[in-house]
Length: 153
Picture 1 (tube, one colour):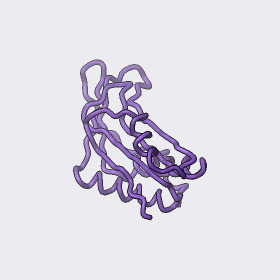
Picture 2: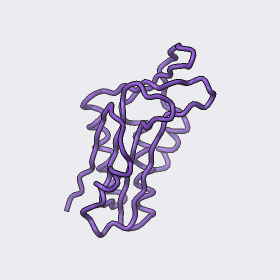
Picture 3: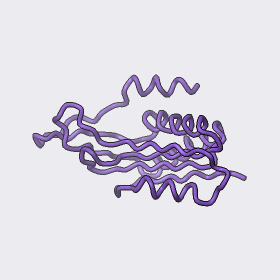
């Protein structure tokens, strides 16, 4: 049986618990579920929001490609990946990854793999908006994100 991931790119917020229930409700062989929710954070006390843009169609296709690799590599029984776009205030959800498997290590690895590749390979762009009303520059992927992805090769 081929496991098909659930992939969405949307402006609307998501409910992580509801998404996890949806992913796991029909397969009683699932023994582990790992969820990761990425939030918009304000490290320096100056950020009011992030603006996220994506390349429609291409973003979903790349997320699907990465998810299928994760399912195959870690023998996942289910995988959900949701990425938001638009202007997202600090403290709000940006991304959700849920990996389900028979055993915990595969679920942890699958979720980590998905996030490491999402951060570096999926066509999303971020721009900071300050509390002072000014917009910053578009942000590039960080070297640490590229290094994290390299560990999976």
